[in-house]
Length: 97
Image (tube, rainbow, N blue to C red; front, side, top):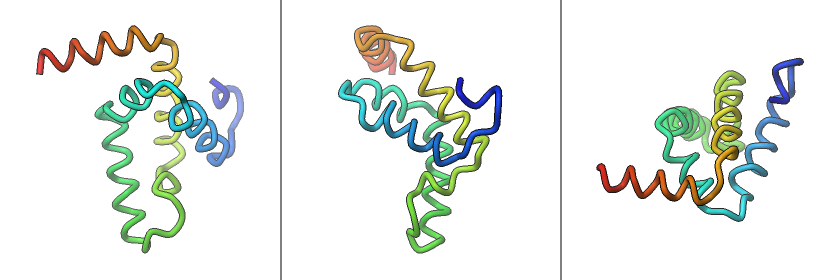
């Protein structure tokens, strides 16, 4: 991970998250990322802070550096899997629910 060896600007982490997840052509990466409870929890807190600050900036701007690093680790773990693997996991979880 790019931030383990040295401190990295939170803006760089945000940019990398956008590239890895939001701009990824495979929709399953977005589904897998945004459906994680940890991601939902972080983003819910960030959205609440964003709303309280009159929607200034972006919701992700209100995540802490630690939260950004966790989001990045989750994204990197998801990207280690192929889209087919992620779809299989998604459908398996949907059936169990």
